Amino acid sequence: MRLKEIFNIRIAASMLMVCALAVSNSTVIAQTADTTVSSITTVEDSAAASATQVSPSSAPLISTAVDTVARYANMQPVSAEVDYSAAYKSGAYYFLLFILLCVFYAVIVKVLDVYSLSRDIQGRKGTKFDGKNIQGALFIVFLLVGLYGVYWSYTVQGPMSMHESASEHGLDIDFMFNVTTVITTIVFVLTHIALFGFSFQYRGKKERKAYFYPHNNALERIWTIVPAIALTVLVLLGFFTWRSITNVSEEDQKKAMNIEVVGEQFKWNLRYAGQDNAIGKRNFKLTTPTNGLGIDFKDQKSWDDQLTGEIVIPVGKPVRFTIGSKDILHSFYLPDFRVQINAVPGMPTYFQFTPRLTTAQMREKRNNPAYDYVLLCAKICGSGHYNMQSKVTVVSEAEYAVWIAKQPLYYTDDVKKEMQLAEQKREEENKKIALNTNTIIK
Image 1 (cartoon, helix red, strand yellow):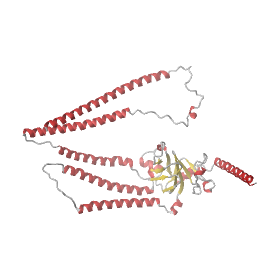
Image 2: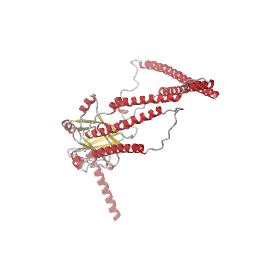
Image 3: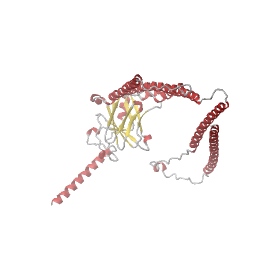
Image 4: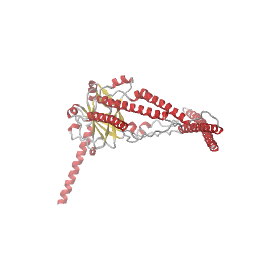
């Protein structure tokens, strides 16, 4: 038995030496690479400096007669290659360091076990090393560290992620979120105290025997009924909250201001209902370069619709969004207003809410004069998903009236000309069909 223990120690010591050599080797390689990179950078800098020292009489490298900005305006910039070698080296270093610590701990434990075994063989009395006590103490240490991590998350990360809602219904959502958070936090803390506490209290000891406790009806009733009641309360609270937000009466719908938002890769198209507060019909078959939304201008409700580049809404007035998509699935997401709903191709969805804080008021509350509300896409819709956003501004009714009066109509002269040309072309085709039909009949 003693030879076997010593043999295991040699194996562990060998692994320790290999890891130490690997860590030192990676460090040397990283230093060598840094030296090489710095040398190459110095040579490149000197070459660039010499290249820039051009005599005044020499011709420029690029002709100034060519408008390069206009030529390359529609071209995507070449993405710069990023060197991740330093990150890989750092990751490998810390991984090997972790392995090294584990091996070191294993060697120490094995040495103490051999020491205790040798004392038993020699017949010496003394305190025998017991790794279970150390493991039990580590359970308590990690419990305290974990509880402090919970406290730190609430006091530091909590204020960073949760802010006051800018909409009226958002207050109800925040209340529901807070109730859920309080209940789950209490359960989390109590269960982990019990888990780590029992692991420490009932760690393995020779003088202790396990007690067989197969069944207890009272305990099973408690841990079944109590969670069932808590989950039922949370589910019903969420159900009624969501129902009150989405089930808007027809009377309240008529009071709201109508805005249409259509998503496409990778932007939001915004259309205001105009003076009649009614949005004109759309038909994807009518989509043209001029009529990008495929609006049916035979519907007179679309004649006063206005196209905008951002969302501006008045505070305290209900706003109803009609949400759609031209290509794939998107998601209409206003985080400050607690609004999120999918934009589905061919199937309009709706969301109505009332803003309660202007942009200026929110800037004061956050102590950030540059803060703005933003409309985002919450679905990963492609390579430009990160850039699919639009500015949202909440102002007073007077400021909104001034802003909306400056917005252009969607039914422009270009659209009218395109419709007239399309109508003339359709009439000519109908005449040709009629002539062909008369010729066949004869």
